Length: 354
Image 1 (cartoon, rainbow, N blue to C red):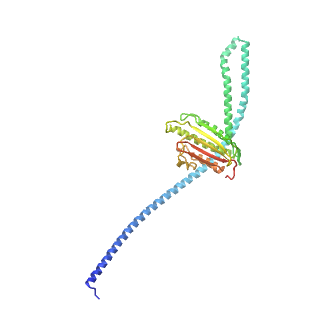
Image 2: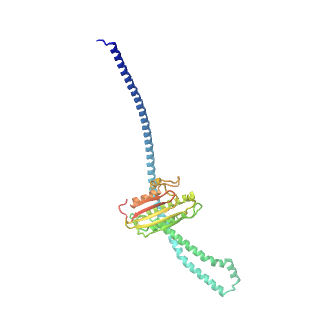
Image 3: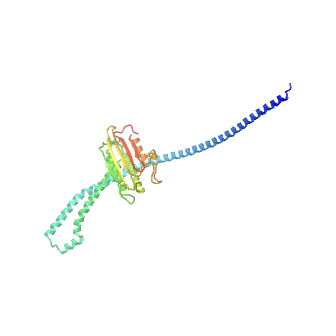
């Protein structure tokens, strides 16, 4: 049966419509294919970038791990050296103490002997107002009047110097005392005082800043069960950090209002009877610590100091000693430009520490 002309034309038109529809679908498919290909390329590029970043992160992590391992080994070596040095310093301080005590014990009799000799000279001058010419020449040669005035001052100066050496020797022996296998009852105020004395040279005025004042506000504290040498190391690290901060503030110059702050460290202690803890606060009026840095301040190898001036270990070691070795807490309070305050809390009795 043959199709009529009209039917054939209708059939052709229908096929042409279907063909156009198919061509449009094909064009859309081609467009989708191209978009998919572009998307895949972008994803491949992104994936390569992520892989490269992961490789870089892995390399950085490996490098940081190596640095931490090296720092750990260096720290162990440093701790061993510090222990050896502490024993050496304590031994030297003990050896110095013996002859100094001998000198100190003889200074008072020397002052009495001088007093007796000067009294004898006064009596002699009263009894012989006109001495022999040779005696007058000798008196003039030795400048007797000057000796009378200066010799007592000399002995007084020697007495003060010996007392100073005794104080330093005692502080060194306290600071460098070797820790036993077991904790000891320790007077924290003695540890703080000995540390401040050892740092006294850094507190003196120089061409960069005036003398740094140390204000002590001590409360009544019981003795604390701890490893004294380790706690003294914490005090040393925190006080030295405070000195660095006030020195930097002095280098930066005046405050925003034009005034110049007087460099100062403040040490406060108190007994927290409700928690059976003692609290030590060491504050400075230095440059302060910005908030983003405070979160990392106790991380190993983290430092804001220029290369060669900071190891990034001092505060990390202090935190480790307080938290891990003594089951205490060490926190920091600070506003940028307003100084910083480190707060140590230690239990009176050590329990469950590593």
